[in-house]
Amino acid sequence: MLLYDAPMPAPNPRRVRIYLAEKGLTVPMQSLSIMAGEHKGADFVAKYPAGQLPVLELDDGRMIGETIAICRYFEAFYPEPPLFGTEPASMAEVEMWTRRVELTYGAAIRNIWIHTHPLTARVVKQQYTEFGESNRPLAHAAMMTFDAALRKTAFLAGDAFSMADIALLSTMDFGLFIGVPIPEEADALKAWHQRVSARPSASA
Image (tube, rainbow, N blue to C red):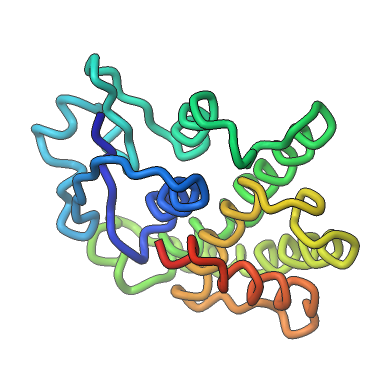
């Protein structure tokens, strides 16, 4: 087994590292440079045509991509501590909030990164800056939705730390890196960010 990883600030590989740290799992890793395009190299693409990171190579050669799929693979073998919920309702809540992180906030952050940031300007053939900037209000609105939820519960999907929190933390820290701040009025979200950032796994 080998996990193809990428260093900070790449948010998706970090998401899996945080998950593994919460589980206390150690997995062999090989780090590839996204900025150097190593994940798009011929040898890597031949093994994993999507050319994305992270990806988990199993002992039989199968490649599992997508962060949630990778984490669910490990969850099946190591259910404790549970990070995808413990019973039908909590499992559904974790799934709901993880999807909301990815489909609303994550999508907005991705568009801002691709179309407005100077680092991506070196590799993106055509940046649509106006489109990228139009995603900032979407990111703000998503964060306020998370803030509203966190005014009622300690963590995004309830009273227990879960995959939804890992997804939000990794995305939010990347958003901060590219210049998308937490809204000033989002007191609950800011308090949550401070708490989860203090967890040992956050340094993964």
